[in-house]
Image 1 (cartoon, one colour):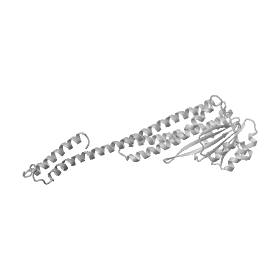
Image 2 (cartoon, rainbow, N blue to C red):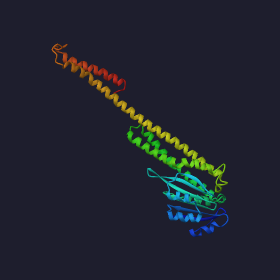
Image 3 (cartoon, rainbow, N blue to C red):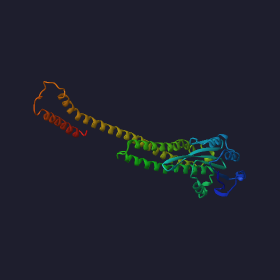
Image 4 (cartoon, helix red, strand yellow):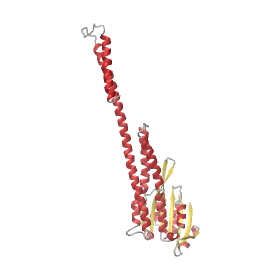
Amino acid sequence: MLVNCVAYQDGRKLADIQRREIKSYLARPDCFVWVALRDADAAELAEMQDEFDLHALAVEDAAHGNQRPKIEEYGDSVFTVLHTVEVAGEELIAGEIDIFVGRNFILSVRQRTARGFQDVRARCEREPELLRHGPGYVLYALMDAAVDRYFPVLDTVETELEALEEQIFTGKSPRENIEALYYVKQKLMTLKHAAGPLLDASSRLFGGRVPQVCGGLGDYFRDVYDHLIRLNQSLDTLRDTVTTAIQVNLAMITIGESEVTKRLAAYAALVAVPTMIAGIYGMNFAHMPELGWRFGYPAALAVMAAIDGYLFYRFRKARWL
């Protein structure tokens, strides 16, 4: 579905144009066309390939989707794949943006992404001095917006993790804690899959030899790279925290099982003493100490109670009971 098709010249918007007018505007000097598609089908991509002379391999990647974040050069054009991550209830939805950038055009194809980039277009149109850099600046603006949108998602996951850390020591079911921590780890992995590969790819857009369409924008792409470094460092820290929290939760389970084992052992010892004495006096031998003694039975009970009382005192003192 076509979202926007706009022509720009000298950093200012000329007009919203139709698809059939694209080639005529591409022929104008200092003019470029910005086309935005959403969930494009094969026919729409084939039409854009004919309009902008896109490389077949790049179009194939965009048609198939589910690509790893990357930046590839095809002659004078650049093909960029970005991932989007959006919060939907308690889940994270991963989408994709495929961006084709040439000397006088930029085509963005948004897939499985609810939130659009109208705010990015508005931002670019408010900055004609920067928009004069052409499609390269639009590529920066799209990358910057995509990366900045990761941070609120990261904050949401971090808040969820903090709440789970407080529950570890509140007596909540350890199994539920581990399941919740595992889901948090999955969410962090989703963000890592989006930001990690893009960190390496974006480093090629400033310093040294950069694609021609990105020339003169090194400072801007370096800013995106700095944001990605900060994001990846935060992700690594949170992933380590989740791993530690899971280990602590497992340690709490082990400690709880140890406490149960100690209690069972203590109760077994309390039962073992009277069982031993009663067993000895129940063997029915004719010649046994105190067999004919009038107070033998109460004395045996008193001895059992005294020994159990002493054991109970020692177990309580040792915090086994």
